[in-house]
Image (cartoon, rainbow, N blue to C red):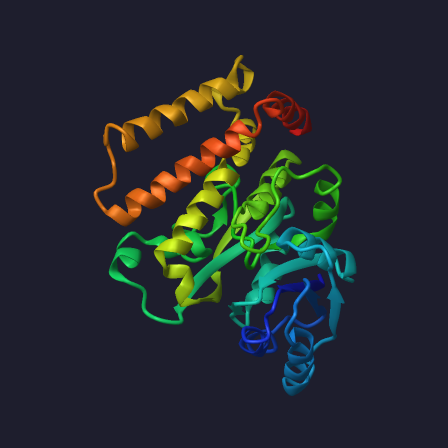
Length: 329
């Protein structure tokens, strides 16, 4: 088993050094090869120079390749990294993820013991630039930043949570190349646009292909959290983007779980009715409205994003649903 670690970068000169220092400490089993691929996604700083210097300083433990991806956006950068990879397994590492030294080694053990597992995810541990405000910590909003336990214990989560974080995701490259043959519904974060869900879409498509997803509690990485991501303004934008993405991901959950709606008529209208009802109850009549004013605004932005995303599929929802049902194995 050999691995290609893909780090997607956009103006990452300040974040990369520590990420690469941790990556250089990977301790892999005998016979396992790995490589490092840096994808420069239109950076305007010294990302490439810093990456080269830092890897040389670390003693070049494995080959590092730097490639350019001119199309802006995380999804484009990840696809480019996969195209340039040499090995049969890929690992997505964000430029602010600091992997534990046994991350790759644990992946090897899980894949060997579970042949139907094609995607593995780990646990992110937050490292704050500055201690966040109490409202942020009390409401556990850091869990929305690819940190925390996804499940209470390790194992197959295909029919439970059904997804792992894109940060630290390990997967079979042949599966990735299979599922990207069909267009994705979502475009991951791009500039100031905080729509997300590309990692969930990968997991759902793997499940539709008949494979399993594994969450491993022992596979850990630190996730550096800049102070700005703990601000109310960022959390409002993030909630809207996640809500928008959730509208598209809802189609996957209907098919993956074989929800009662799957074979009913007017599914799009049914879902819209429920979301509008929830929005009116919480924001006009204040029924079940969150008493925390910040969380109230965040939840309202999430509902707005969901409704906007759902409305954008007014003429395509039925076709997408039927296509995914045919794709299910």
